Length: 409
Image 1: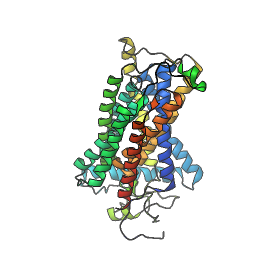
Image 2 (image 1 turned 120 degrees about the horizontal axis):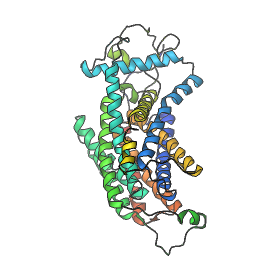
Image 3 (image 1 turned 180 degrees about the vertical axis):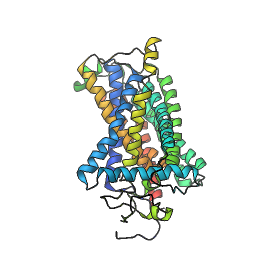
Image 4 (image 1 turned 30 degrees about the vertical axis):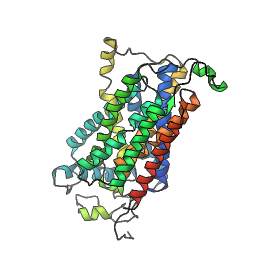
């Protein structure tokens, strides 16, 4: 109930919480990639669609875990959190048809729009992910990671075109530099070790069962299509799905205002100023950092669970992908690891997408290439060259330039 902030908002990375989340997203993506390839090659469990189904179904846990965490660590009540989240969703969804005003009574939740949104983002999110799961068993982790992260360039192009922005020479240069770094890694950054190259002692047993990529060109093409679709998804998510408050929660000082939970509607000016409401019989509005994207992540998981089991019997019947459960405990634990890291990456990425926007988030994720290069070295699947180091340096430099440019605005 006190404190105001005057003056224009400035871009910030979002504080320690967002930076820690960013680091977790990078590590989780590399771990998910390595575990997925390990399961499908070394362990011989080559069932990409079923793995995809399991991992994306596991997204269901994102919202319940975050919700329970908030109840345990704060004084919020379940009713306060849910009322604030419902209010934010209702106002945002209704703004699509009301010229952006979003002023609707809290009792009139646009359920049909919400369900339609869930179905659309489930399809838009799952299609590139499914292509990624198929590609990861056909090409090397480094190549798939590099081409997948070329969505940074597509995201910038779509952002400028769809959001009617002006081209920024510095940002365009940074994105192009990052993309050039990707190409450097793909075409010159790594080489497969020769048959006569000695194995590292601690990897000799594992490497004896590793299968080389079976169809690298097909895998690269699938990843390229996935990258293009994912770049488009990021921009559409930021433009239509993310709450306007997502980018303000960690960059604006907190302002407390008391608002009753009746049908009283807030003006747009009031909504922009409010950071959080007192709990009790009042809503927590806007929702706490990350709660809205985690809700959407969980709905993607639920929609995946309810709908995407349907292709499994058809794939089995026509011999495209034989259905089979894991045959040993090692495979079970490895798949559990894929699900765990997949939840961290996808939930974290959705949060950062709303907070930072598609350009800086996608370019930031290019840092996974650097981690993947070193993880490939550790597991002995590729050898590092000077071009790999150069490409990694270009990616890191491009991300640094982009962050510096955006922090000045």
